[in-house]
Each structure stands twice: as structure tokens, then as C-alpha cells.
Amino acid sequence: GDSVTQMEGPVTLSEEAFLTINCTYTATGYPSLFWYVQYPGEGLQLLLKATKADDKGSNKGFEATYRKETTSFHLEKGSVQVSDSAVYFCALSESVRGGADGLTFGKGTHLIIQP
Amino acid sequence: NAGVTQTPKFRVLKTGQSMTLLCAQDMNHEYMYWYRQDPGMGLRLIHYSVGEGTTAKGEVPDGYNVSRLKKQNFLLGLESAAPSQTSVYFCASRPGGAATDTQYFGPGTRLTVL
Image (cartoon, rainbow over all chains, first blue to last red; front, side, top):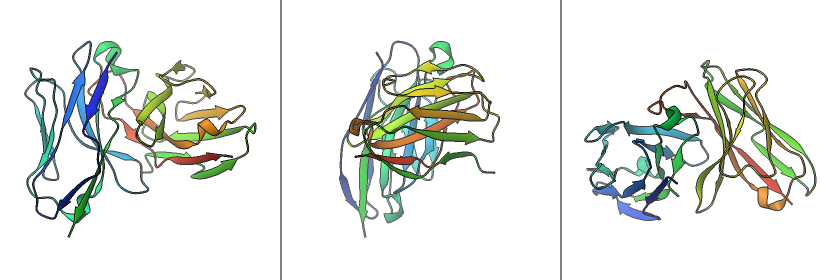
């Protein structure tokens, strides 16, 4: 079945540091890829997504590129802020049946940014 | 615009008690989902619905039942709660039809079963 593997944390960085959170996936079809973010005490919200190979999703200074050849969707940000502290989830949606049967999530990466 | 709302926000049950979690969305979405979130496990799909009157099992359906009598509501029931069902439950919805669609999540319900 489908699966998503992402680096587990916590990942602790200083403010203005460069961020990379690795995400790789296995899928039987041609998935869409997502990064969701969960701030403390809240639900998940979409950070960015990419729907085909070589697409780059971007939002709030975060970027991720859909790499079909390496089955990866790594999240990057050039200069993190304390407000970026949260849990980040990589997820995929299978194209089969229009992705009706939900998202497959990684286990989440807890990011802590220190001033 | 309320988006996806969940009721209640917190609940404590004793083993064997029953309860129903309510999810409501005002975006006229076709698809709705129930997930549970456990430490170190990410989110796992419990049940989902692709339209009013339809439901299907997800990855971890045992011990739960669901109903989608109205398009805007998706109910998750626990008939006889067990400590293993202590978790944070998230409801989500999306327009439907394309795997590229974004899912929108509610704020979650934190359930403790003693």
C-alpha cells in the first residue's frame, strides 16, 4: 500500500536558519503531494501542494518540489522564524478513484525554532 | 465562514460508555473524513464518505461507526469506548472528484477513555 516517510523530530533550529524536512513516498499510482502544518492546539492546515512531477509548491516562504525520480517532496525554507514552530506533516492522495479514500500521512515532524 | 467545526472539543469517558462526535461543514463539500491522531503515528483514516448516505471503512475502522444522513454532517460513534480509543479525532472535508483537491480540517476533539 501507499506510505509516506518523513524525518521525525523534534528538529530544533535557531531563528534565521535554513530548514529542510525530508519526505519520501511509495505509491501505486500517480499521487498528489501535500504538506500540512499543525500549530499547537489547532487542526491541520494546508501549507502547500504539488500535483505532478517537477511541480513546485510554495507558500509563506516554504517550498517543496515533486521529484518523481526520487519519490521525494522535501520541505525547505531559507530563513525560519519562531512563529514557524509547529508540527509538519507530509501526505499523499492517490489518483486512483480521485483520491476518495483520503490522505496517507507521514508521522509528522515537530519543528522548534529558538530565538 | 465557519469551515469545518467539531463538537465537542474535549470529552472524558469511562470504559464501556458510548458517545457521538459531530462534524459539520458549510462549504458544500461532497467528501468527508474522520481521522485519529496518536503520538508518533501521524493521522490514520477511520471512516470516510463520498456523499450523503454513503460511508466506507478506512485504515482503522474497528470500534467505530459513522453516518452521513445530511451532506453537511458526518457523525462518528463509539458504541463501547475502550482506553485504546484515547486520541485526538479530526474531521476533514473536500470538494471531491479529484485527488488534487485540498482537505480542510476541523480543530479536533480530544477524547480520553479511562
